[in-house]
Amino acid sequence: MEIISHYFPDLTHSQTKQFEALYDLYTEWNEKINVISRKDIVNLYEHHVLHSLGIAKVIRFRPGTQVMDLGTGGGFPGIPLAILFPEATFHLVDSIGKKVKVATEVAAAIGLKNVTFAHARAQEVKEKFDFVVSRAVMPLGELDKIVKKNIKKEQQNVLPNGLICLKGGELSAEIVPYRNKVQVYSLSDSFKEEFFNTKKVVYLPI
Image 1 (tube, rainbow, N blue to C red):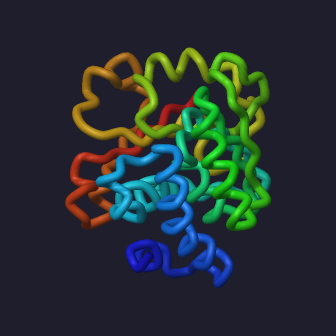
Image 2 (cartoon, rainbow, N blue to C red):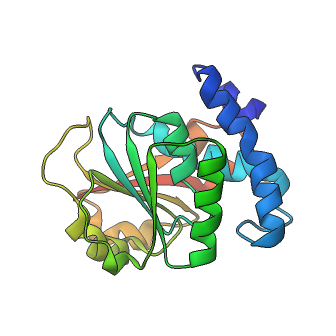
């Protein structure tokens, strides 16, 4: 938990308590439904929670912002972002029902009020949002096609509405079709841990 408070020192008491509760909750649920690699659960805060919060190094969602987390798995990046931005709303979507169940139960256990959930495929979601976020779900081109229908026209944030993805590794081929629009941020500029050396946030206005 220290790693979260180090990079986000302005957390309220309530937010700190919510973040602190995640380790026991995910450890317990992960024994029933595998949403995080069992070897990786010890790295929950660095590899999953802080990684999710990398999006906050690119944008601070304004109150009233509506965000969809597509392919949320056990709730990443949606749950950490919902804790950090209590005045924005987050809709967490995954096509695997048991993963949605874990995310739903974790959110309920920590008292998150600004999240909703859907067991659905991306193509089935009809609502509109300011932003769609995802973590290593699918290539940018595929995501772009799927979520165009879900992005609102009205703007209320510093960045124009669009898609914000957490990605790792070599991205040059993936972003070629979007090179005049896409912005890529290296998380190693914000987080000093070795894990983030290859991690990036990719922002595509839509």
